[in-house]
Length: 169
Ligand code: MG
Image 1 (cartoon, rainbow, N blue to C red):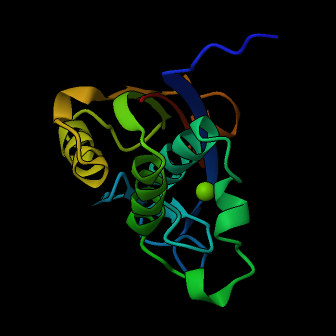
Image 2 (tube, protein in one colour):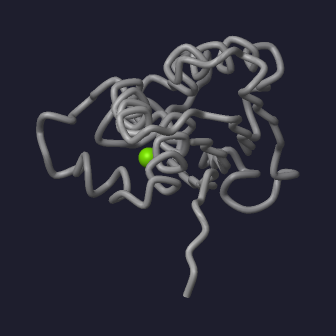
């Protein structure tokens, strides 16, 4: 069958982290999302710094490249990744994209989080992602949603993120 040259690749990333109180009441880490420290009484449980937005961005790019996912590339059984800044994962995915000849056309994220409110910090998160990907901020979008107080996310016990990215040759 004829295979036309594919000049576009789409990728999807998803992540969820449980949000717990800080030790000794729980296992929450300081709440970092999109590279920003959020002021909140709970934080993500995770092996790295638990940045669900950076993890979903990483997986979206790796997915578009048909590469192994973040859990395969940076296993949570590897003590080197303990508490690691997840910006390193995004930067590595971006490096792999550009070395394979792909540019980021745009990236769109949906963050589902009951508290704290995302609107005051959204643009700073967009800026962090844009800088890591080496693109202008107008190619990166973040939408904040709540989960209407229902289920684990709505009860403030988890943060959930969806990301789609389009790569262009
Ligand atoms: Mg994760």
